[in-house]
Image 1 (cartoon, helix red, strand yellow):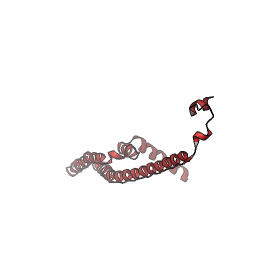
Image 2 (cartoon, helix red, strand yellow):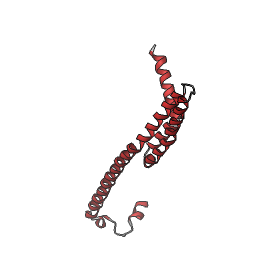
Image 3 (cartoon, rainbow, N blue to C red):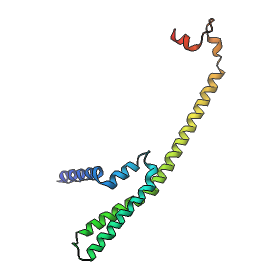
Image 4 (cartoon, rainbow, N blue to C red):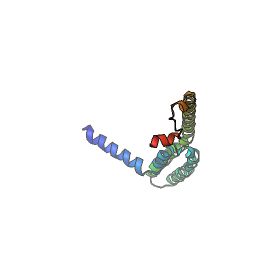
Length: 139
């Protein structure tokens, strides 16, 4: 009994994620490259808010009541787009901190490995012909 309901819910969810404009924008913003566009995406909330205001005015003027569904949809999209700006900024700051820590760890590891190889007396291990190391490896 629950299997058809669950299957229908899953299909509609994936359809919405794939084809609805705000879902596409939010999915794009949630990537690492898209995090910087979150604040600009907040501007997309303005047309949705204006559409909600217009549809609400039409309903009050005598238009069909089903336009209230469009008002709710527009207000929901407005809310989503308004919230993605601050959320993307927080995610961007966290990603930059993570990248800086990784870069710092890599730099320390490179300096540590360079210091350990400079202590090694590599000249003593070379053969008597004193060929460069890359020629010794190729031979």
